Amino acid sequence: MDLDAHGGNKRVFQRLSGGGGGGGGAPSTVDTRQKVCYHWRAGKCNRHPCPFLHRELPFPAAAAASNGAPAKRFTGGSTWGRVGNNNNGSSSNHNRVVIRRTEKVCSYWIQGKCGYGDKCKFLHSWSLGDGFRLLTQLEGHQKSVSGIALPSGSDKLYTGSKDETVRVWDCASGQCTGVINLGGEVSCMINEGPWIFVGIPNIVKAWNTQTNTDLSLTGPVGHVYAMAVGNGLLFAGTQDGAILAWKFNAATNGFEPAASLTGHNMSVVSLVVGANRLYSGSMDHSIRVWNLENLQCIQTLTEHTSVVMSLLCWEQFLLSCSLDQTIKVWVATESGNLEVTYTHEEEHGVLTLCGMPDSEAKPVLLSACNDNSVRFYDLPAFTERGKIFAKQEIRSIQLGPGGLFFTGDGTGQVKVWQWSKEPASTSF
Image 1 (cartoon, helix red, strand yellow):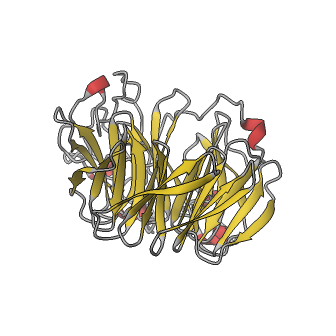
Image 2 (spheres, helix red, strand yellow):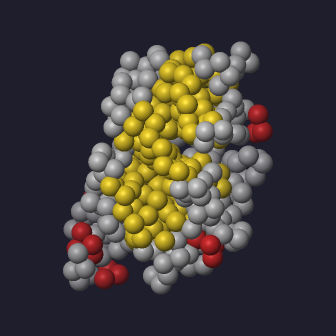
Image 3 (cartoon, rainbow, N blue to C red):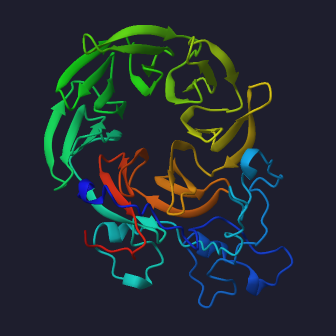
């Protein structure tokens, strides 16, 4: 892969004309020939001929919100969970046909042994959708990938893993140029400017890729599950439920302890900064909202019923996902408090969220679930437009330059993807 070669590429990625399975069954008053075969959907139909359809019917042109309730409208005309609406009020998605294929990767194809070829009813691809392609795979980690970082000004990609190592990859050749043994499993990793921050048990490692500064920040108790940077502070969510903060001291070129935020009664596993607020998600099923100026908790959100795995800020909205199989969209009321304006229901627990713009500068949400897949949704409609599959859960997604993005899964494999207007190709 060559990150530099794509750095000036203005093509982000192509808006699809058809998604990879957003639902939409037949109306209740249709005959047998207009009903979709239940066994075909599960990839198990062996009737020849089958009296039911082996394809999906077109998605209703004026579908309502996915939970059956009308979506609320807010500033800018955003309408959550309603097909065919977007931020500028355009109805360009009204005629989109959503086609559901057999959404399971062929196990024989993975082993290189499938003899059915194009006639196989299972997928012979790690993705479903025409607007992006797999460029290459980076092999080396022996356990789950827990963090991916692209520090500014560097020609290297860094990946952290539960195998207690950080691997360094050359962006031009895709070759691993170094392995850093840390003596503890990496639970999270982020970058801010030239700095890389790595969370391992009881320590946060801080590396400056330009000056080669190597620091160890002490204070965490147990695993460091999440980190974020905001208002000149580095925040780390820890296993004991605390959020530790450090402030950078330019005179000493180091980080000094600044505060410890307490309130969660279980591990803090997700952090994000936005709108002069720090948001923290926890195993105690809650989200806490902290004022970045005085570091005081100003609101506690308790609508999730399981671990809050990931948080994402988009425009004036906060998005949260959980193992309770939901993605919730929060917006501030006139009083300034957050409330849920839309809930998107998944069939599986949601592990992480990542947002990126498409080729029309419209937002797309990547949602990794614990069924070893990543779903792509147009926002705010939550129309599904593609999928990525993996052998094990994908817990790390990182945006790169030039329409590149990276995924890391439970097997230790890192995949490099690119959004492109050209048809998918197996050559890199």
